[in-house]
Structures are given as C-alpha cells and as structure tokens.
Image (cartoon, rainbow, N blue to C red; front, side, top):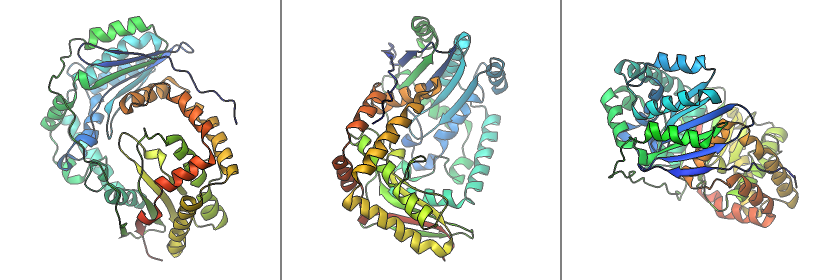
Length: 424
C-alpha cells in the first residue's frame, strides 16, 4: 500500500447568535485565501412548477446587489487579480471567491452583499433567462444530455432529482423578478447559511469581520427546509428508446445509488474503480468493451460519483455505433452481473486501493478545493477529518468487503435502460 498521507485540516467551527455557521481553516503556505458563502437552497427544495428557478437564482447572485452593479463587482474582483463564481445547485446556492490575503476585507464584504442583498434586476434576469433558454434548446440536440436526463426521469421519478437542474423551457420562460425575491426571502436566512474561509489569514480578525458584516442579519425563527420526497428503486425495471438522427447511440443502464454518508462509501469507491470508474486504472468495463471489443471511445460505470445528501445513481454509460447497440447493452449487463455475483479478485482490490489512496490527496491541493470540501462536509455531516478517515477506510477495505458491497448495492434485475440514437 502507498505511504501517501491525507491532509490534516485544522478547522475552527463556530455558530453565531443568529445561527450562521462559520468555518475557518488557516493555511499560511501562500498569501491567498478562498471564501465560500452559501445557503441550503436549490432545486431540491422547489416544486416542479418552479424547476430551474433555484439554479437561475444562484447565477444571479453576481449580477448586482443593492449597492453595486454587476460591472462594479466584476471590476473590483478583476482589479485584485481574484476570481469570483456564483452557482445554484441541487441542495446549495452561493458564491465563492479566491483572492490575495490582503484583499480579504473586500472579499468578505462582497460575499455579504451578494448573499444578503442581491438586486435581482429585471434587465439582468431577462438576459440570464434568455441565456438559459438558449442553453436548454442547445441541450435538446445533445443526445448524451437527452439520454442522461431521461435516465434521471426514470430512476428518480416523482422527486426533484428527476428533472434537469437547468429547469425546462416553460418554467424558465415565465420567471420574473418577484419570483427570485420570494425565493431569496424564503431560503436566505442566517440560520440556513454557511461561511467558509480557507487560507492565509488571522482567524480572530476574520471572525470579527464576519460578525460585523453578518451579525445584524436577523434569524428566521420559523425557518424549516421543505419535505423532500425520496426516490425508490423500481421493480421491474423500465426502458426508454428516444430516436435521434445521430452517428452514435448513447446508452445509460443502472438504478438508484447511495448517499454520500453511507458507511460503505470506501468499499463502493473501490468497487467503482474496479468495475468502470478510473482514468488511471484499467477498470473491467472499459477494458473489455472499449479496449478488447472496440465498441466505444467513452464508457464507464460508477455509483459513488453522484452520491450526495440524497442517493445518487448507479450508472453505466457507453456511446457506440448503432450497429453495436445490442452487443454494447449485453456487454454492460454481463459485466455488471459478473461483479454482483462473483465480485473482484484480491489483485484487483489491492491495485484499486493503491490508486485511490495515491490520487485522493490531489482533491485538497488548493484553498478553493479545501473550502469546497469543508462546505460539503458541513452540509452532509461527514466530519472535517473525512480525508484522513477516507484513506484509513480505503486501506482497511478487503476483497470480502467489496464483494459484499457488490451484492448489496448492485441489482442486475433492477437495471433501467435508456437509449438515445438510431436503431442499428
């Protein structure tokens, strides 16, 4: 096994009087820092009629505040040589900044403005909605996106995961400023918010500035996140064929996956690496279907990659020529069934463990990566020592563990199938 060591993250966690959670991790290696400011809000908490409103609201956070225009915000960050991103996702929405240490005051001030007082200007919203509509129309001509979207509709039917994060043309086409203002009022409260700062700074100074900028943000005493319907695994499985005149057919095969906090996460990561999810490891499905049979350039199979606050999806994907459609589907089914029935060899497990422990350290190389991890760890309840625990758990995984995970979490008789393209 490798002697690579996971980073030891020293995190100071505090909760302000109004409920705002603050995570501070000092690292003085370089004179720079990263700031994440977010709330638990996103597509997960919206009804179907408002699909895409959460992700669009996230994008709008950098489109101006009550005190600064979008141009002023961009100019301020660019003049400091920093980067600024805003995003609304499935379960979180917020902004992230990377700056030199000397620009920390400006970064925190901007983060406070964008989180607390976004302008949601009607003109900027109109432009953003038009861009989103154009993106959606372009996506509908992308067979892989169409296939993935249809696969989600089957696997996660009746839940927010079953629809595109981007929303739909009908829901995006009718959004107005008042909708985003109401969304902000509903979810953006200090007792639903998180500020993470990682890098070269003095924790006491940063804590004082955060208190000054966010301390008067009033707690919402009645706040509670909406109930979210959980997906279920379908028996018997379902299939869908969508005809598109393309040179390649896109195939998704799989079923409901696991949550990120599953106790078997390390064993599942090893399982994924062996079966079909590793750029540096010769996984079974890519080796057999791509390298040996020449059926595809792109093929993979994984479960842990989409695991989050809710179960993700166990998915096998292959893009192939129409005449190879049946061979490709049969090949995926065969390899998945073999893994579920027999599991991996000792040699495969040892090689996969070495690969995973050797590569995981690259997930924590930058302040931005560490800040993103700490935010996820807080949201998902992973614990800030997860990098060390993950390596230790992977190192303890046995062939027996992976075989059990394959039997418990892969259900060959429950595989849903989506094919987009032309019949061979």
